[in-house]
Image (cartoon, each protein chain N blue to C red):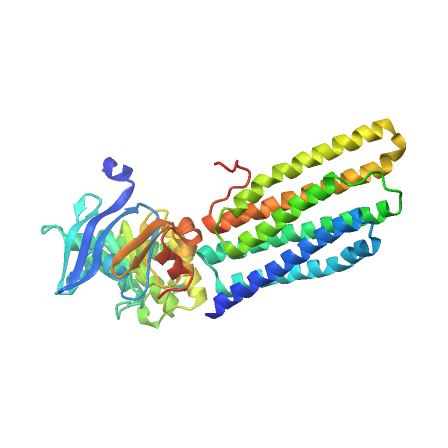
Length: 219
Length: 257
């Protein structure tokens, strides 16, 4: 394999490693909340610096390749996409940490009610993250479009979750501190899905050279 | 004349073939070159890019076995029409080559030579043309005190700018550049590239280059040729970021062959 192809391949592998670290962090953070596992929550928080370090490493590698290889066309789109999506992935890692932090707080209190919406949202979001990373490996496919469409499901669940909790809060204002933290968690998941959508959009750019951000998907 | 000024394309090339004997060096190329823009022609060695460039002012006539088929228009002039005034064509469509090739005479004489041949004899007028051309070639400040020294005593980058000044003294409408910086260091190259951007305001530029970064940096349009054919032609921004043709992609990303 020519040296540059090899370097691009290594870069891709690093992005996938970062992606899988973030995917695990999201999964574990939600589990630490639903299963009231504070040890796991602390572990998610502790692992975040690895995500940050890898993000910086990937960024540096992208800059190095731009400087030394002067990439063009598909290579250029791959490297610029990588730079952008690692920023999104790192932010997603931060949001997983936020979920873990809320879990630590909520785990100290009696459970308000069994979780219903949040596990559902987590399942969809994790699926979106997984498929986005698959799309990044496979290149051009329908996957990123499907991912973008699924973002609406997460948005709808965020609203349902909020409305259900709002009704409970109106009935019993004493639960407000706990209920608000639960709405935060839903919001974090919703933001994770948004970042995933950004990544899917960048993958479409990487494949087709067309920016679809801020346009409807049909355009 | 007004009609000419309103024309968008200064060259219109249609179904154009160039042969060296039996060998077809340029195959069926159709291409319009926009006025006051920089058009770069890229492609691997032997793809016909220099041949196509040299056809634009009939430099290929110097090769006895060469012949062409198809149409190549410079404004409303059929370049290969029998009665086309080739001397006048080459005045209007100047050329600068890979290796700086000043005449073995003074800096002044290098620039004044063309205007003198054209019949300009008055010293003051020649002085003015020489200064103006050297200023336009961004060389005046460096040579104004050594106009009588040999053009061959200058540095490589200065010699190349002297050749540009020599061509500018003929008041060309187009300048063809055949790898003008491949023998120059990066600083002289940047100097020439900046100069081309300046010249583009008044002159149409067509440049053949092996340096893809150079094509990407300076040109408005890029043509990619391979085995004599024009594979892709379009805006430079698009061609280097999102080329349509797989061959173009392979060539510009260095995965050719």
